[in-house]
Length: 455
Image (cartoon, rainbow, N blue to C red):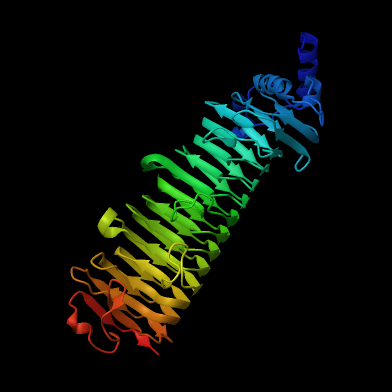
């Protein structure tokens, strides 16, 4: 469809009643806050709701015209069939929540941008209709953009990733991503990103991923999301199947999320620095609920609830990858079962730590194995276990006494109902001592055991 000058003047005249049609970045109210953007009804540019045709061309033209004038393209309720839509700078598309549906007909993505700042997508249902996406693409695919916003959208039936972001600064808020075949939300090399208040359900491999191409500062905030029923369709032993995955991304905060039913972990941090995992509520995990592994350097895991997993918290890979430096504090961990996806008979563990870690003020109950495990063979250095309450675990605290194992402080813990020993020494997974809370601790110069209460 073509537009003459009269059509365009009419469209922008209608938009002018809602505000000046100038780029959003240039419009500021008193105090620096942006004024509401003008709106253009997509119908005035030839877009037809619920037309049984592919409207990619006319939608693309409408997007470009609205962006050029700094206006929001408003799509009335209805179904719009399209694919491969490109978003230039200052694009803004808005619909009526739950009633405006874009259905993908083809193309590498449904909506995509590259190098576009000030892009906004809101109040749309984006339906992938299980149409194949290009390798590594998302139904929404946004790259190299600042002040990008995706809000209050529903993303369904994506044949690959739901939302794919590359080097994006901005926010994803209030969206629902349901049934993505691969990752629901994938961010790579974020430049200042907030992922908050979203609902993710039935992701094929991972709920929310925050990754970088190489280790470095990222700083993404992953807060107050609800993530349920994360699958592991690609197999492996933990690369997929995690509700939240953080890889090579430093200074990431994961807080206040509700996570339920993930094939592997609720939160998994791999090769990260200064990660905070705080205030999350996690249940129904197939393996380790909160996992920081490989070459990590700095982690705070605090005030989380874990109810139902094979391992509550694991801080690992000191000897082989240099993983070290953690605080594990104030967590409530309970109902940990034997068995993991790749090891069906292995014991449960409440908290496991290997190097330069302080474990304090945690409450651990009902563990089919040790409530706290310090070290694995020689992989142990400078772990303090103080002021924890352990109840109803097979073993209260197990500590490595293998050759070359390092120093551990075990003090002022309360350990109740641990039938296989309150504090025991191990060489790898074999218990080689009696109950060290009673006698025998003096044989091991690297252990300091004092002030614990056992009943």
